[in-house]
Length: 632
Image 1 (cartoon, rainbow, N blue to C red):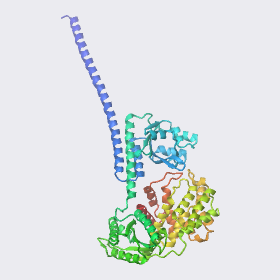
Image 2 (spheres, rainbow, N blue to C red; image 1 turned 90 degrees about the horizontal axis):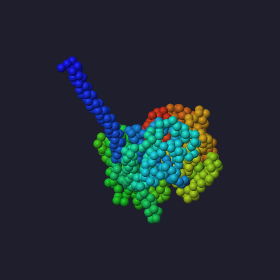
Image 3 (tube, rainbow, N blue to C red; image 1 turned 180 degrees about the horizontal axis):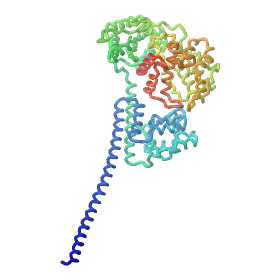
Image 4 (tube, rainbow, N blue to C red; image 1 turned 180 degrees about the vertical axis):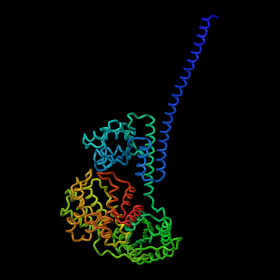
């Protein structure tokens, strides 16, 4: 083969090698590209699985809460924080659809705590959760709930104006400008076909994927189920008539039975008696031996009551260590005999580790001591606490009412204040309140509920966020707290009146000052601090028959460490009744909405109160208050 023939042969061989290499390269490129595609698919599927896993965990959290008898408010709060934290939404809220005499409206039930809502609240002033939100029957929320359909809107400003039509346009624009939210997803909540409200999700995405819609629908169904379960739990709880720890009847059943017994006694002109029993030293038993032994002592008292009761008697646990026994047809002599038998039976019990227990007992009889049932229960209570003050482990018979009751004093005080225009209240409100009070006075029915209603309405005139009916809870809690310190009857009665009147000085302050959403100036703070003295000196001092109440109100903002006002009293210089008002007022203020903040949960409120033990109030008072709230 010649030289050039060899060259051709080499070229041919090189070409074959090149073709082979190129073909292999193409194969390698195809494999490489397929690998890249597979990696992307794996990454996408992994992300989808992670999201699905988070969604399942979130649903599992809700299911766990639903099966733990958690209060609905707490369930809903954890729901919004779960979906916000675990699934990365900007903000989540559950909105209730409500109705009152003014018509339908909306209100935030709970929402996630995040920077998005904090920013909006700062811009709009009064927090959105503290507002009454407008409900438009032709708007997007109405469409969602009527059609039971998930809706999405990108009109953030329009939606904000929809629920707050009075919000200035420039404020609404500022609230939705320069923030990452692109749309709001509105999911209707209709448990048992009732229009409960909406679950709202604020997202940075413009579009709502089908998978996300399916998940949110499933999530909403879980929320609806939790609402239904909670409602059923509450209904069963309300219908229950027995106390779970002791097996005795509960307070609700006792009070219902008592009403029927009053009707029977009045028809037949027959007496009946009530025995009030308070287990001695329960706190000491709990502190020294633990709550299990405290429960054992409580159950032992219950067993004594069961074994000593007739078939027609009604023994009930009223709460904590307190019990009542209703004795139909029994006068005071027979009731005292029965009470002494119960006392001895309790004393004779010797329990493991604890030893002997005792109880303080009071007795009062219908038609003999009073023909007013509320008064009779108070007399029983007072006799029981008289036994405690006299050394415990004894029985005391109540004394008939021979002096003006605290209710009459409170009614007359309110009438004096309103009729003489001592406070700036609209004329129609003043006339309505006076009529309510006069009706109660004329009928000789000094109903506590009338007094509580009057106090609630007056408070609402300067605090629109005040919850109606809260005054009854305040007085009950203050009275229960006072009894734990064995205060005598006259001091407890003065405390009740003071609880109704302690903040009445606020009516003399400018409303815009009390409802201000921004921080107060030093001058404004000093102005607000004047309200106890205004109430005590300008409004109440001219009323001769409540002079003993005035010091309680005057000092209800004095702190245990001397940092309070108006006189910077400290420690035992401060009346205990004033300290009781301060702690009760602080607790209820924390769990109510305020213009400058949202309401706290009862647990968070108690934690704040505990932090100020020894500073704002007596440590012993805080300890008793925390124990009391656990039982209410």
